Each structure stands twice: as structure tokens, then as C-alpha cells.
Length: 296
Image 1 (cartoon, one colour):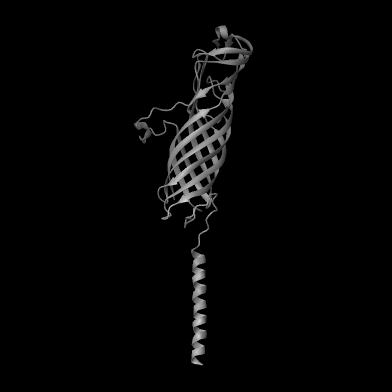
Image 2 (tube, helix red, strand yellow):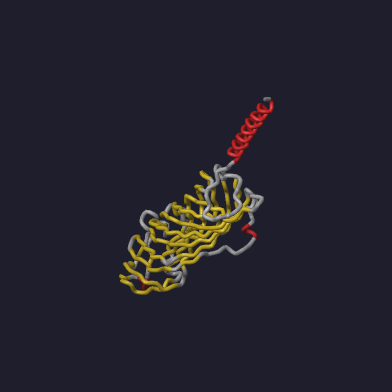
């Protein structure tokens, strides 16, 4: 009889231990977002609730753009204008804390509201410079005297309907070099591609959609009339991005991302007479950026 009691005791005690082990395992489980990739090693921690911050530099390319100019004595559009990025020369300025904002830079702060989803705000400081000289089509009218105070347009005065015009520095200087600033909010998804056995090093794909405001500082001269204007909210834009983020440690990472965007600038400051004179244009861009960041 004692042997029977002993058997029942051992069975009951064993079931209790098993239940405790299962409960402990459940408590130790971490909810990880499902990745698009079938990586064998999974993270043993969640990023939900983490913040991140990164800083880096970019290079951009721009599509052709129609630029419309309006003001006293003129209303004309330059068709399919080409423009380029203007890279700051590689120098110690990129590492000098007092000059770190001179080159094209990117800054972003984000928050993981789920393990593999985040929301962020950022500032993309790009540069846009119209190629001078170049020959483009023009429509609209240019008076003999334009702007306030008035300046002479000489042989360029007239009505145009698709004729070609040669843009020289005496006709136009047009650049967003301080800069073509895109202040934006982005929603991002993160998919682990590879996780090291230590689970501290990993490679992640980041994709996202965003939108925001364009806040350029535009340096414009129209028939030598103009100035380097103040910053202003001149329009809006939308963008999509995809990139790779390599976590060197659990918190420190380097990232390369390519972003494509479409913008609509409705109120670009030109000659300094902001109430009467302005330019408008749509700019499509491709931006590639390298950043270093920290997640905490």
C-alpha cells in the first residue's frame, strides 16, 4: 500500500514540475514580428518600445522640372529644366561638430510601436542647383521692365509659345542649396534578414512610406534681380524608401537607404519681393543616404 501512495505522489509531483516548466517557458517567450525572410536564428528580444536616432549624409538625383515664374511684368514657364545635386567637397567639415550641417545631411528620430513597425520624424537636407547654362523651351510673357524695383530684360522681352531660350547667369540663377529641405514623417517596417547566433548582430531590411513639408532656402537671381532668400514652407512631398540596416551590436547600427520622392513647391521665394513675386515647380528625386545610429 505504501508503494502505491509513493507512485501517486511521484506522478503528482512530476505533473506539477512539468506545469511549472511550461509556465516558465511561456513567460520567457518574446513576441517577435514575423519576417519576410526565413532566417533560422531568431532574436530573443523585442524592439517594441525602443527609440532610435541616426545622423548621416546623402547624394541626390533630380528629374526634369517645369519652373513657373510670376511677378510684375512677367508670367512665364521654363520647360523641362535640368538640375543637379551639389556635393560639398570631402573634407574634415564632415567630422567637425561646428560645421557638420554644411554638407547634405540626414537626421531622424523614431519609435518602435511594435516589434517590426516604427514611426519617425526626420529632416533631409538636400541641395538642388539648376544647370547654367542650358537651353530650354519657354512659354508665357516677359515684359521690357519687370519686378519691383524694375529691371530691364533687353532682348528677352516678348511673348513665347515654345521657343528655345538659352539660360545664362544674366538671365537666371536658381538653386535650393541651403537647402532643398524635406521635413517628413515616415512609417517603417523592419524585417530581419540574418541574425547571428549571439543575437546581438543582425541584418535588417527597412521599408517605409512618408510625407511632409518642403522648407527650402532658395538663392534666386532673375535678370540679376534677387537674393539668397530666407527659409519658407513652400510646398509638400511624399516619398517611399527601402534600405539595409546592419546592427553591429544590439543598439549600434549603420544603414544605407534609397528614397524616391515627388514634391510640389507652390511658393518659392525669388527676388525678395515675396508678396508679388514667386516661382513654382514640381521636383521628383532619388536620394541615397548613409547613416550611423543608436537604438535604445
